[in-house]
Amino acid sequence: MSVDPNPLEIARHTVEVLQPYLLAAGAALTQGAGEGIGETLFHWLKARLKRPAAAAALEEAARAPRDETTIELLTLQIRKALEEDPELRNELLARLPPIAQAASAVGDQNTIVQSAGSNVSIDIGRRD
Image (cartoon, rainbow, N blue to C red; front, top):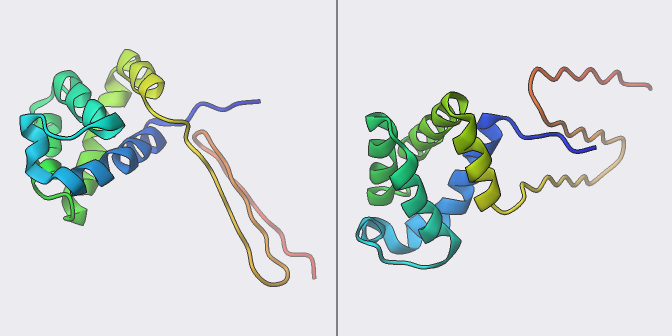
């Protein structure tokens, strides 16, 4: 069974895909430099993000890709856009590589839990 990721998960994944390209090309991305999925995704988002705040967040992330607050703001703006436009969500998911989940544990008595979706509640009772 596959569970569709929520808008925040998609937004975070989008920024994860974008960030290496933003770091490599910096502000040059706004002029069309770069290549690969990050560059393609940047220009696609630039054309599709209609809200002025979202477009500004994308431009600012290109200028300051190492600024954590800027990256968080871009994530928030992408999430808002996805919540407002289900078609944008579907188109973006089609352009992104699959969202991977991974976990590792070292030591004894570890518990690893992964979930997807929204309104998930997990209660892990320790059995000693």
